Every structure is written in C-alpha cells, then in structure tokens.
Length: 164
Image 1 (cartoon, one colour):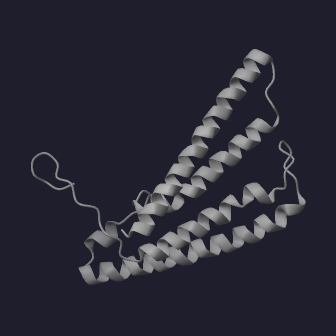
Image 2 (tube, one colour; image 1 turned 135 degrees about the vertical axis):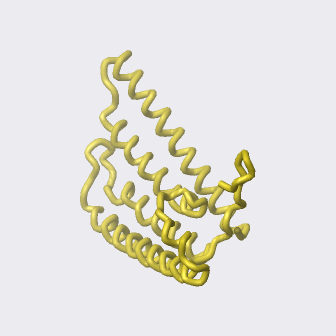
Image 3 (cartoon, helix red, strand yellow; image 1 turned 120 degrees about the vertical axis):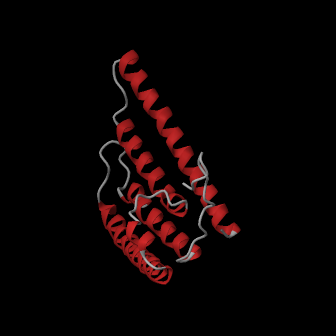
C-alpha cells in the first residue's frame, strides 16, 4: 500500500476516533445533565447524531482498504485465476462508479438543503450533510489510489497447519 494511502488511512481513522470520543463525552454529559440537573440541552442529541454520521463517513475508505466491509467472495474463490481477476476488476469499477455517483448526489443534496436549519443547533443543514459527500469522495479517491488489485493480506496459519 503506498505511503499516501497509509497516511490517509491513519489520518481518517484518527479523526473518526476523535469524533467518536467527542460523541461519547457529549452523551455522558447529556445523561448526567438529564439525571442530575433535570434536563439536558436540546441540541445535544442532534449533535451526537451528526458526530456519529461524520465518524462513519470518514472511516469508510479506511475500512474498505482493510477489507472490512461485508462482501461475499465465494464465486471469486472458485473461479479460475484469470476469471477471478476479471471479476475483481468488474467489482472495483462498479464500486468506483457507485461511490462517485453517491458523492455527486450527496453533494447536490447537501448544497440544496442550505435553506433549512436544524432544529436543535440552528445551523444550516448543509454543514452536517457535507459529511456524506466528504466520506463518499474520500472513499472514491482511496479506491482510485488503491487500484483494482490491492495487496492481499498475509495468510494466517491456524493450529494444525491449515491456513485461515
């Protein structure tokens, strides 16, 4: 994996982790405020949702690179090597087209939502919605940089000498 991809992956995972930790602190504050002070700020639940969505969207590309997204590769495993390679190329092109389209559609949606304000925070809905095109755009970029044939992780050997 090129160093640019490794750096992007690490930065995005660290940022997503930071957003989740901030979300956790916010939720803990909300629980204490609700039970000790009698009420929690109205904006807290909304901000917590936005932070979780932002964290997930930032982590998309890194998780894809690690092969962490659920997929079924039964057919790929039973095809001759050349056909399996063609299938992987097709899957990569399909994913690339889908995520680029998702980035484009979500950008248009986020920009068109600017005339509305969120109820709790009172900010333009464009700001939290920009996490969608950002996540899909970064995923598309990482797919392009990685290419259709990513390096396979080293196989692991389990007890008894068989490969996992």
